[in-house]
Length: 177
Image 1 (spheres, one colour):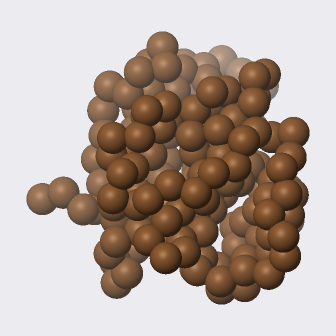
Image 2 (spheres, rainbow, N blue to C red):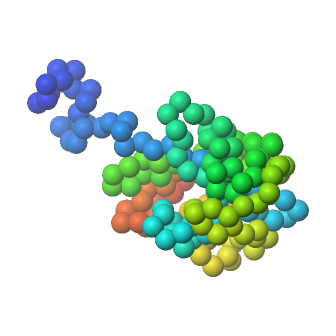
Image 3 (cartoon, helix red, strand yellow):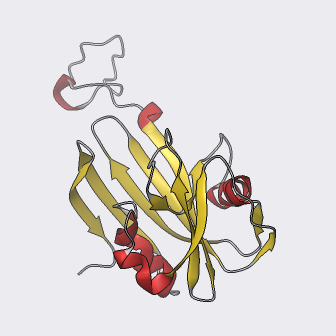
């Protein structure tokens, strides 16, 4: 293998000398959906936040050394004041854009303790699960996996999307034939 970098193995170089591939571009996230009596708790993100003005599950980035379920419990408590009691890892959604790769661990819960409390992250609101497909302002990637994680209790969701200029150009998952 020919290498033009100081790395004689060529491992820090992409195919045919392309841009270096690095794990620094990988961002692990968690999203949490609390389901109660046919409704799910969502947050409408505040201005200046990722997905500002859109309804999305509660969550955020994993901290170094943190597992997805622990991160989900922490993020949910930070954003809602509630502690989820029965977190279930239900799926993984991967998105790749021009700069980053996001790995989103999807967690659901049906039991919690505490009092719902507003946060600076955004507006909290319960939405009927059957209305999510037509909910104005629902973040565009949410419908890709919400049915699978909210309605199908026996199957782990796995999906991936390629995003260019904030638009999804390719998508595949284990739910489609």
